[in-house]
Image 1 (cartoon, rainbow, N blue to C red):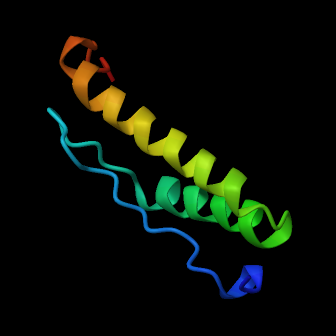
Image 2: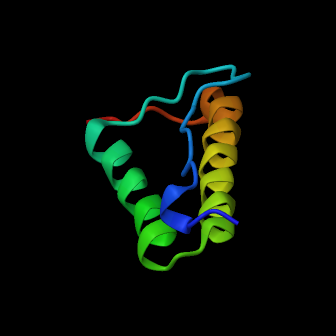
Length: 75
């Protein structure tokens, strides 16, 4: 088994099969990367990292399909 730090960590791809494009700000994208890095490198739990990453992507996909029914901000 490979050393945990030598394994391929993850590949973020947010926009696949979506009605609306979900755009993450640079800050949000960096925060997502830091969260996944922490779980992978500090907690040394690649399975948990993959689960959290999958949840992030599924949330973005759900948002892309419901975005048309949401009210735009007034400000």
